[in-house]
Length: 415
Picture 1: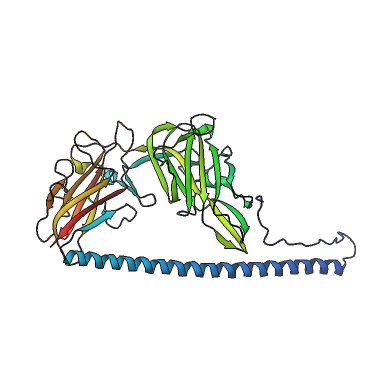
Picture 2: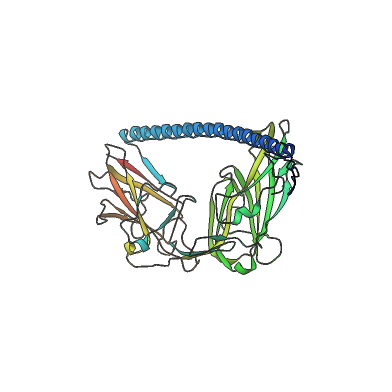
């Protein structure tokens, strides 16, 4: 049984001795049966109370989700109205994507092996992953069974938990490749406590059988969006990690959601992550901080390196942008991208082409050859209410990584 695990039910039955041979005593049997009967009733009562409690919690969660859905729907409706008012007034409209909502993207124009990888969990567009190998766990290609070596032994150190009552959880769960099982650490205080945050550090060494270069670091905090990742470091030997993982901001990631960092192949043998929780909940009359990790993975991804002179033969996707109902495009007044697009002398591996037809034959703007729309706005033929924007990415041999596209948008006027 795991350390600090709470026993919800602890059945206690005193076994009565019954002779193997000789007379059987009814009293001994009755006492055993009565003990079993009481324990069964205790278990049933506890289970019923737990089920009722969980049902109430689910009802609350459902109501909260429904409320959030209603609020989001209302915000969308308001934004639609704002867009319509701006359009009627002849103002400038905007459309931005963060690659977390895939409803406006179409892959069918390209062969299956030439389609960008859009990951809504991390909000990233990259060249396709041809293969991936984790440095912490192994997946059997035949059965899809995940094996986590015993040598994955995370070491957790309190940074500042103010003497609270700690439930340690199971840190190994953060490295098993399964988001359903996670590491949750809890720190409890009396409700009267003035503690505002708790912090913890986790160190883990890469198993020696997996120790090789990596180019992809993924992390999903628990609870996602409520935990601060204040530091992410590595070392290339057995010493304490002191080098920041490439791409991780020096200021850390507050209220971190799913994070993923791409970099040139680098040897990382030991990792250190620091977490901070500033949000607490009331549980059984206590002030409780929960934090941990759904998943942390380090690995090597084999990226597709297609580089064809014809843009439409590269890894790409079509991004579809519609005007508000009843309106048509007039001019494209600006276009932006994070990272910026490739231009002569400044290679980024990011390319865009803008079309007015689904067949991709009527091109009105090319990011590589045409002027920036904020310098020379792009005229759109009359009666066009939908644009088809080809987004193409090319592997960068100099940096040895794929472009990681996280945001793109345009501004336009309408008729």
